[in-house]
Amino acid sequence: DGGITQSPKYLFRKEGQNVTLSCEQNLNHDAMYWYRQDPGQGLRLIYYSQIVNDFQKGDIAEGYSVSREKKESFPLTVTSAQKNPTAFYLCASRPVGQGADYGYTFGSGTRLTVV
Amino acid sequence: KNEVEQSPQNLTAQEGEFITINCSYSVGISALHWLQQHPGGGIVSLFMLSSGKKKHGRLIATINIQEKHSSLHITASHPRDSAVYICAVDNTDKLIFGTGTRLQVFP
Image (cartoon, rainbow over all chains, first blue to last red; front, side, top):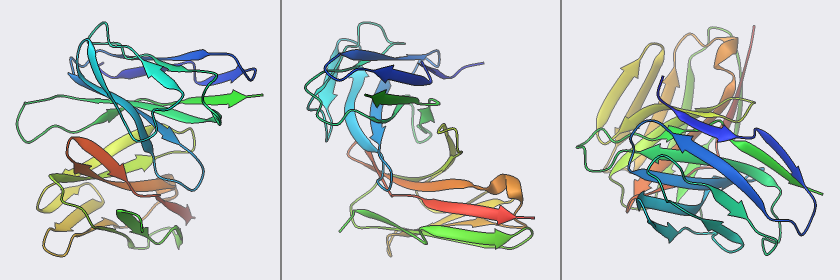
């Protein structure tokens, strides 16, 4: 079945360490997105990519980096520069340029705790 | 003021009740999405609307573009409907999310 796989589901890291969250999709979607969710707040966009080897900053990109070397993969690195990295991270994808029905598909998320 | 506002923030219901969750937005949109988030965190897309009304099983979503308002209705609610329901709008190729409505349905 097609979908988005995020791994791991839970991740613990020490303060000051970089950590990379995986997001893989087999839907042949062009666009991929990373969102952050904090309690009591709506999801906020970190980075997005509409095509391989290209990506744009979202609303809260500081302290994060991404790459898009393959269409199916969009890993997110949380760097030590991110001041408050403990959060729930969601990856999403959607097709581009296929007419009106361009709904999003979401992953199951990674809960990152920095201690 | 948030660009996407949902009400209520929390909702409890008895099994069988009719549920309505509201979403208002203040930006131009190309589509509006209703999403469901279960306690594990994963999100499922329920509806994508650009006009009118859509129905899927016991779920109905409506949108009024002129009033910038959408509603999600659940008929004959069931405990398995307990989740967070999130409204999100498509604005210049990006989603803007509401903060969600936490629904608990008791038997």
